[in-house]
Image (cartoon, rainbow over all chains, first blue to last red; front, top):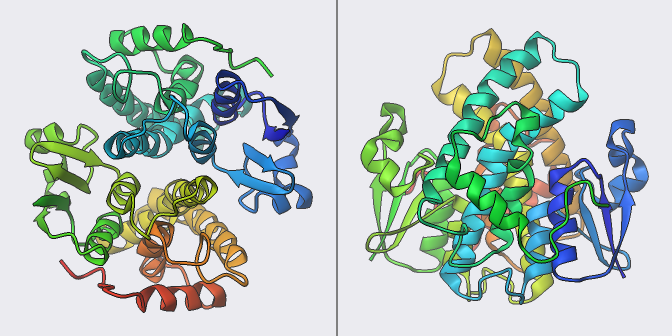
Length: 201
Length: 201
């Protein structure tokens, strides 16, 4: 059985839990207490030298890190991953956008506001993350104009990757009120079969 | 003929130029002057609403953004991209690592040192980027122990993605002296057929 080294609070972990559930792949979830430094312990660094969850143990002793790489692995050959060359590339475009322009702003703001004291340095950084995060939401809102999903006509792992932190963006101090296309898309994703909430372990 | 909207100074652009050259795909290169804000102009935002180069016009009027998605598109079906499921996932793991843990530290430090005045705020940020960039280099050095390339036994787009900013890391204030495995791998990448330097337009 596959194992997911995970943290229940993490949107990156949630991407994998959600895909595993929707693909009906049985797995064992192992909670890693990031707040206690357990993702930087010598044992964990043998699993992922980069010291981050999630990690998928796809075969006993064989590990894959990076949430979007795990999504691609899990969905490869399923309807959650387009079978054509340009579809795959567009999917990766949105997953790269998520990791570079979205997650470092929206997820990091959420993490700080939920778990850290906000000193002056973090307050200044939050302001620039607010601006960059809104710019990412603007890009998403524009793309979703007239579209039901991010790539092609159906739900893919690009939607899972972008849903994970967008649907909890308000916990990061963002408001989704100015983004009707995003709000309709979020509702569409939530209505997909075998959807689970982020709190579902 | 494909078109690449590019900037000659950009390692992200270089990834695409290098892959196009090694795959012997003819293309027209269009230089975008980022310093003049040309990647944020209304015309450019119609090509990529996220306002970043590189962008590949793979068919007339059809655009693909994000350097690593472009690499995947170009290499799909070629020896630069593994044909098996786990190989593809490992390749994406390293490309996600590059965009999340490597590029924002090493490339951004290089960009600031080459092009911007270093005020107090940037000096503080540079210090934390130095630490995080060294941690990324440590992960690469460990992985390359006993390995010739990042994924499998041959040169792939994971090597291209990581080479782009690693080989100019010293311009970002990093020294590669403590990283013999990385230095040997850089030499191996440079010796690949049809290699071009970052300055080659």
